[in-house]
Length: 210
Image (tube, rainbow, N blue to C red; front, side, top):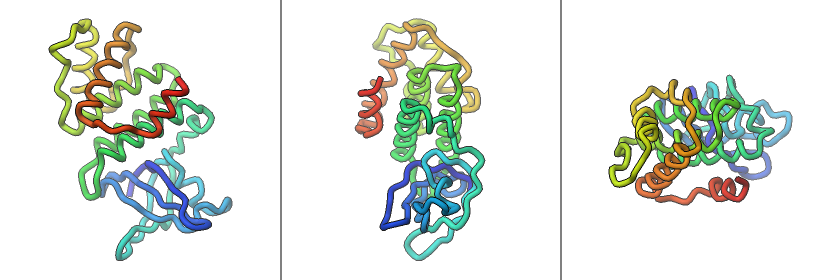
């Protein structure tokens, strides 16, 4: 299966439990035996953000990771403390939105492209966050468009319409002024509260860093 690691937690002395967002089966939970041993072949492959092909064994009550071929570890985020917390927040949102055996290809693609944008210096992280939040709501079929009860710059309205309607591969291709960014932040915060309404641990940490 093609997928990306959303999170991992230690189990026992050497194992890991992972949440894996896949193209074929939506979000899956799986165990990686011995993955916390330094020399284990699954040690790096089961870290958050790892994207690639995973071979899973389906048992009676859970999956087990057998092999992994990782195409992108997003190593830039391992040396960028703030970028890593943005990535963890985006993964938390994806984890919240996705389910097993659902068609989650668009959400997986969105997370992957967003992590790529985080690793590039061309866009500011706060703008990437606004784009991701609004597009995640749109992928879930809930984005209502630009709010009609707020006075927004024409550029802000256009940006919101572009985010909602553009293919994911073309999302992170524009920049905005500080004024437009501020308005986008207000709108995305409003919509996240309205349509998600959940506190995310990584976001709480991120807000203390920025």
